[in-house]
Length: 258
Image 1: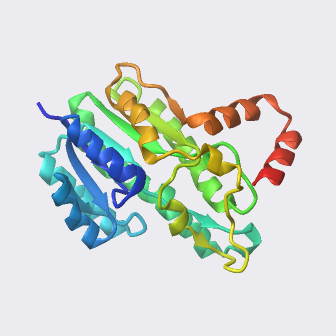
Image 2: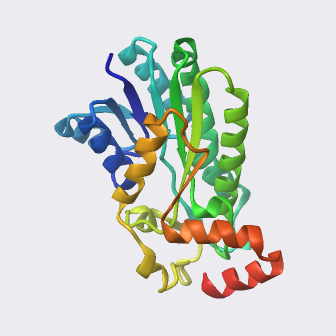
């Protein structure tokens, strides 16, 4: 039986690359996008477009209902990839702006997953995968809201994995470092006169979105998927540094390099 995977955030970047690759690997791919024109474009790529705005609870409910109807209540994989960044010093962010950051990167993901679990649990198999970030385990100046949402996503994913133990549903996190996508272009900058930008050294380590594909394939297809998949050297290095360095030393490095 052909397995069906829902991928969110398919307008461009990691989501689009992942959706096209999974279709080529034989999956039936439901590709969720926020904009109507992108939803329509998915059909030209052999994908089935789903309208989804994670900021809007009604949109999440409607997307979940559509997925359940299209799949006959049997979904194998859910790749929670959609999200965006709010950048700026914390003292420039209102409560509403912080809530919007969490709505997109955590609350909508929770709602969508919760709604789709009944289409996964009865079948005793499946994968739930989240796109996190190196910002999910280190924070840097100007990216506090985004980092906080990804830290929360990591904790949420860890808890979900433990709660689903023995169900046949396996949960993994993909943790990219700098990836060349439209993410930076779509960041909501709180200080237009002093935007938060990546340091020049980041360009040396930036990879195309295809870099996540081996990790995603393993997470979907391995009998024993990893709990976390750091992508590229930066993610691996920061994981090690966070574990080994005193917190004040790491603060100093991140302050000067971000």
